[in-house]
Image (cartoon, rainbow, N blue to C red; front, side):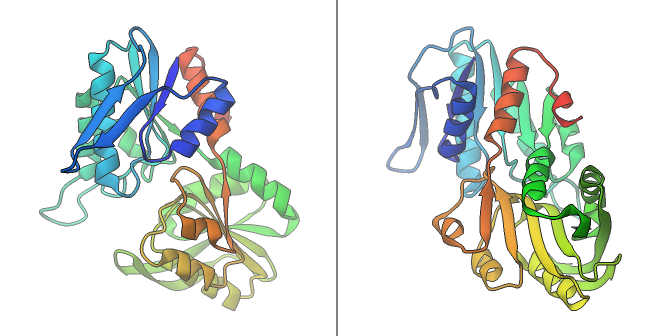
Length: 310
């Protein structure tokens, strides 16, 4: 087994390797003067079980191309099996045609990864679970729930916690966490007028005097979270904390979060945090390296991965 990484989140790849007690594979991923990507694998991978750690976060297109070219390089170097490990799967929000004459880009990206030569895909908290079906190769969708659950238990009195879904679409995820924590569930009823903007309409459930935990898979602009926090505090919540798997945090999202009424935003390291994220007073990062590392180990040893989440 060998683990390699592109330029997207080398810190996470190194942490995964530390968990597995294996060195990070030697590979050069660089650009020519015209920004063309060039990859050189600097050690023998013939007959090896290779894992490529590369979330396709900003800049998504560059990191996706790095992944595709690395897969091709491994395939042409006679690797026995190539697993693309995408802690964050970019384009996942384009999983259906929301209106006429639009693409299903998540399916296109799945096709590209498959055609490049990947034998298997491993990802974390897909925005839509059905994206697994877009791949014609085995796909493991890991869940950050165990990581978030441990953090919540170490920071909160569960007798006063309410898990909150920021929209109706996230109810299944929020209910699963509420069941693990054995606590109440509430739902934010909102209307989204356009991408990145939403208006909170109502809170379904009793949150008076409670510590509210907003649960979602992606935070991008941060508008939904901040609006939801304002609405819940207005309804009598004691505090509002957001637990999000993927901290995309584009544009002015960090400023929006730091100036909001959120007690804290907790994200994972599926996307490499920026300097602004690291310096924010109310944003905290928990690592998924042990989770992904254990999934990689079990895959290499042909053991069950789903039992990690039983």
